[in-house]
Length: 503
Image 1 (cartoon, one colour):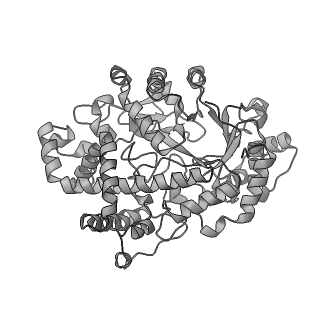
Image 2 (cartoon, helix red, strand yellow):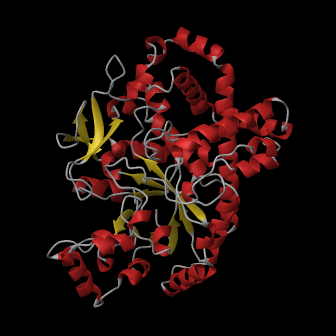
Image 3 (cartoon, helix red, strand yellow):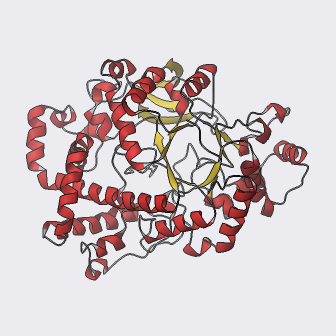
């Protein structure tokens, strides 16, 4: 796959402004799309859209297929006659610049419950044909997810491997009894998922009408506490009690001296091979319903993955194990055609990873914040002149500091290298835009910049600090007034000057 010369902005929908404590799929999402269009951008890149749990990371979702209910636009539910003014009485006070996920968990779920009760009471009969069609079309994952969610609530929120053994181990009689007992709760889950997908599809259609495509993001692994792990237990390495025997992570690297212990269950690739990689085909099919391009996080895990014995305190004592990524992508390509995939090929990249990426023509990634470290930095693959055309260049990603913050904390060597490379002496105030200019001016076909860098924000506004569970991770939001027309005009001028406008 080759992407035409273009550019885009990275922003997770939770970071959108709005009155209810978190970004939503409504008017503010459309306003952001309008601003992207005014700025000459072709792409809006988001992070995974799944329902989040403990830690609030979009990379640890309860399902690889479901959507995040927190993103459902409540104003749209008013328009649909599912919510009314009285439902908003007693609304808590929301911090405008940060998401309080604990607050959202309580209040927003109450609001969605009210919307469902209204629907059951006949408040929005016009939605019924769409809802029934949605349930039929998404049945392959939706029923398991609805049952998983209902059982999780019945067990007080405990992870599935702490449930009663009969439902933990998916005894058919126990599951049949649970489906009968929890039928109402399951239907509520289905309806809330219907609302999410209905609104997301409307936002995506609006984006397409403005010439904007969506770059989605799927984690290579699923969460330990997910409907995928519970319903497809044989495709992972679990013991008889539902405990993982090995888990995922990465060895020590530039993000963490002890590596990153993610804790995700690892795929049993041989089992997946025997059924023709059916789960992966369904996963990519589901992702293509949401996104135009798909960024695969931790792509190198399809060549070989870092296997850590369970339990472990850090990721240091693991080993590399070969995966069956080549066979899997062959099967998915045969089933779905050419895959519009961006390979996140950062970290420890070996020839087998590069071969897997290049055999399928997937563009890789480069991060300019990583381009200026070390003594002999001239050989750094991420320097603008070393980039490839079939590549996506970023100033930074969701795991990086903001570019302004990076420069403020850069080592003397990194600062020296940058000055030598650019023959400039940037100020902290001007550095983020200068790095953006380098990204857009590079030969990489696609350049993507986090919105924080366009706003020239510092470290306090970074999205995530890897290896931590700090209160500020994943919580950043901008204010509606931050999307200024002069910023769009400046971005458009740069986009046109560097040949990325394309329309």
